[in-house]
Length: 136
Image (cartoon, rainbow, N blue to C red):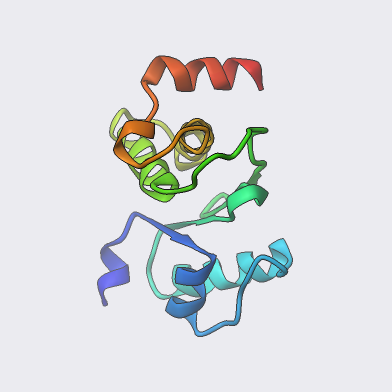
C-alpha cells in the first residue's frame, strides 16, 4: 500500500533484494536488476532507481529503462555515497527535472563524494558536480 504513494524509490542492490525477495548482488545482470525494479513498479512505485556502485545506476519508469554509467573516479571512501546520491537526486527532482536527469546528476555527485574521506565532509558542492558532468 505504501508503494502506491511513492514517486521515486531509490535502492541499492542489497535493499532491492530485500524489498523484492530476489537474490541480487554485484554479479547479477542489468536485466535481473531491472526485473526486480519492475516488481516494485508493479506494487505501485512510479519510478525505481537502483544504485549499482561502480556499475552506475538504472532508472526504471513509465518511459522505460535507462542505464547511467558510473563516472570514472579514484575511490578513497564510499561512506555516505548513497546518502549523497539520494540527496542530490532529491534536490534535482525538487528543481523539476526528470528522474533520469536527476539520477545522472546524483551519480556525478556520488562520484565526487567517494574521492574524499568521511560522509558530511565529502559532500560536493553544486559547482563540483557541474564540473564533473562537464567532463563526462
